[in-house]
Length: 197
Image 1 (cartoon, rainbow, N blue to C red):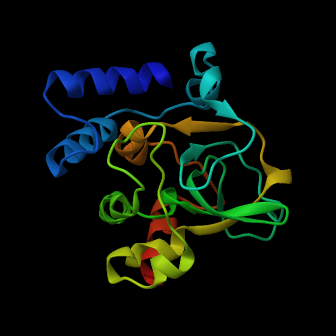
Image 2 (image 1 turned 120 degrees about the horizontal axis):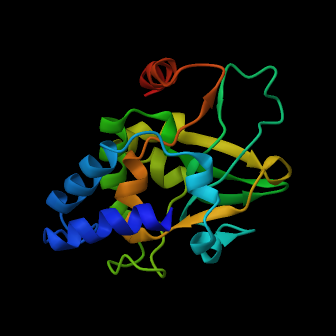
């Protein structure tokens, strides 16, 4: 994964696009990532160069990807096996997070643009976190796309370590085709999510 991110970041920097700093740069990174084909689990979790990104415990407000097997998968209409999340609240046995895979790319971009306003700093380095809560998200119209993204995850059902996504890579991860829905197509998931919004 680091190789993929580095490739896109290098192209962007050469094109004068500083990650996360301007609307133009965000659009460039998102469109570039969208052009990539399917990213495999091996690409995400199998590289030795990515071992320093892997963690057993995600920090609130950071972005992570991981493998997940829903506990009640037999009764759920669908779930995402590779969530892309911002965890925002710890609870007994797990955490709540925003899984951005549950909304279409246009809604993802709008929500992420609004979420940037909650960042604790504008460095977009390892110190940058989103300062979000359900109350904050529910209290402003600019976050309206968040509701279908709110999911509770059980740590007992996590099937891998958490892959940390650096803040400079958020816009790349946002548009990479990594969602893995079981039980329904992403078209069906996005349609259901639009109804929730």
